[in-house]
Image 1 (cartoon, rainbow, N blue to C red):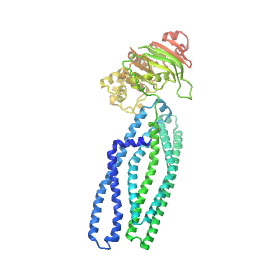
Image 2 (image 1 turned 90 degrees about the horizontal axis):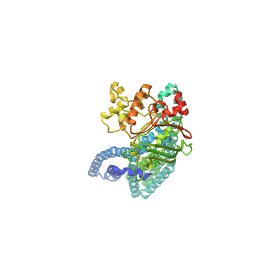
Image 3 (image 1 turned 120 degrees about the horizontal axis):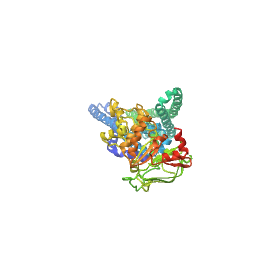
Image 4 (image 1 turned 60 degrees about the vertical axis):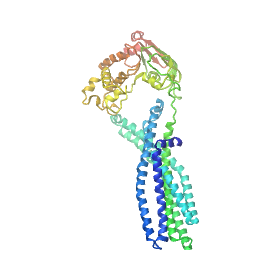
Length: 569
């Protein structure tokens, strides 16, 4: 896990080296001041060495001017490096999430995923910049300060070393409680993000049912848990910081008393005592930095764990090692003894299902909710993999195909149409990213949405609103159909593609769909039986599989389930 994180420094190694070098130089400059303070008190001032006083002051002044520029490097470019590492990690994480299977999104909330993409990585960014820099500076200053104290008097050095060890032991002991606290914060942060995302996404529904108070109660519950999680984290931080402050204060006191005794005893000069106290300050400073680093590491590690957890997911649906490419597909589809269930604990949606669809044939699927109509449409593009059996396209098992080539050959209009925030043009363009404006307009005309678009003030540049809130259900569905026209795939899957259309628009769209379906393999799922009048064959599904099959006319005359549905229209 940590090896993966460290690998992100590779692309920014130059900045890391510059930042670290600047930090080391700053630490080195800081070590000079106590030394020369002792010299001033014990030598330069008593012996009236004015030339050395002025020369030393001039050198220190120049060093402090240099330190200004070093400080700029550390504070600006160090943070830039952290931001770039955060950018790289977020890019990799987003790319990973985009390629995860549908089953992952079935089980995980959108808000929790967003929390991992944004909040967690911000903490990692801060850790990526500050922790290496703080550790390197602190080790140099700590080693330098303690070494000089040993040089002044080994007994002072031993006191400093003893308290330093005590501080580190205490910090390491308390880090476990802090890590546990920040892990809890991360979990509750993801939960409250999920709840907010859900409530805001359904704001119109909650207001229409006057359930604002109910939503507020749900929010309050998660808000309280988030507050309490910070309470636990702050408690761990308080114990940590209070304990370290107490040890540091006793450290100062011990050096002051013991150093005073050494001056009284004549073992050291008063200037060296003052220098020693300043070095103690410079000993405490890196220790504080290391302690702060431990706090930052706890929050960062919690984020790294959650980042790594997703990066380690091995999608069940992925490209084979030596994939075949579906080039110029004919569209022959076969289901051979297919059984499927969404998870181990659920019942089979399909069991021992067999179906053969010829090239250019249009198949209609009818049946009650839950018999597997939409599942069939999602198994062909491998949004899910079959539990048992095989699905074959053009004589080859779909598991042997390159996923992109398989899915590019399939146009899928789902029952739940998704409209991205953006323009109408952008949403149609999703069917073919590099399409020309002429092609977009042509697709919109075939979907019978062009005339409506031209009535809008900004035409194709009109913003749709979040999830297409500015559009009616029928308009959204026609935009989705326009995407498929633009994609122009050899295999069509229409899952309730006209369900949100009025009767007049449906008839107009049906003509376009029939035109598009010519020479292409089409699977049409519909509750409106009028949509299926001209398909090659209709399959009536129930929990046992295919209960009826035939043309619209044949099934109406058979006086079966399909006929009863048709008569009930």
